[in-house]
Image 1 (tube, one colour):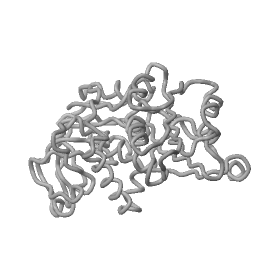
Image 2 (tube, one colour):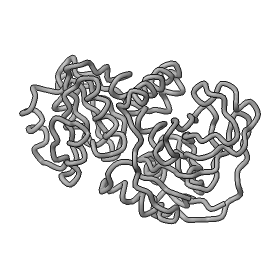
Image 3 (spheres, one colour):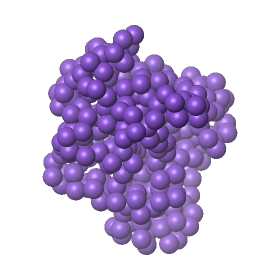
Image 4 (cartoon, one colour):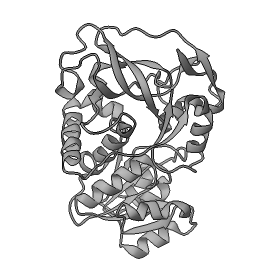
Length: 327
C-alpha cells in the first residue's frame, strides 16, 4: 500500500511517499480501507518530536482516518464503536495516536472508532473524533460554560475553533473570536458576536474594551493574551493546543497576577483517565448532531502525495477549517 512515512523529526517536509505492507488487525483492532485522513496539529507536533511520547521515525504518519472496515481482530467487535456492534463493511471514523492514517489502509483501536453518522459521507465525518470532542470538552466538560457567559475562542477559523463557535452560541454564550483578517467572514457566518484580528498587537486591549473580562478562554495560540483577558477568581482558561509554542507560567503569576482556573486538555488523557467523561462528551456530541447544531463539514482535500505541502500550510496557519488527504 502507499503510505506517507515521517523520516525525521525535522518537520512535515520530511514525509516521504513509500510502499509499505498492509497491516493486520490484532486483538481489539480493526483494519480500515482509508477513504480520507484528517490533518491535525498533532501530526505537526509529532513530526517535530514535540508530542509527548510520540512515535519515532520512521513511522507512518497521521492520527485520524475514516473509511470502510475490511477486517476485525479478535474481541474487537464487542463493546466498541461507541456501543455499536462493529462489522465488516461498516464505515467508521477513528483515531490512532501512534500514527498510521496517512495510508491506503490503517489499523485502528476498536474502542477509538465511531460509525459515520447516517446520511454523511466519510470525508464529512472528519473531525468527529478529534476536533469536535475537543471543542465540546473544552467548553462544557472542563470549561463549565453557562448561558450568558462570554467566551474567547482563539484560532476560531480552524476545525476545532469553528466547532467551538457553533457549540458556544448554541449554549447561549457571547463569543469573542480571533482569526486572521482574511478568515473573519467565515467566523462571522458561524455566529461569533465579535471577530478580532489574531495578529493585532493590541489584542488584549481590544478584548477588554468589549468586556470587563471573559468568563472562559479556549486557548491554542497566545496563552499570554488569554490569561490577561480572563476574569480573576472565577475565570477559566482551557489550553488544548500548542500551535504557537510554549508559554511559561509561574506560581507567582497565578497567585499575584492571574488568579484564575488554568486547565490543560489532552483528549487522549481524557479518554484514558476519565472514560466516563469521554462517554458523556460523545453522548452530548451526537445529541447536537441529531438536533442539527453540528452538521457535516466540507474539508479541503489534497491527494496523499501532497501531504507535506498540506501540513506545512496548516503549520503556517494559512488554512481554514478541516483539511484531508485522499489516498
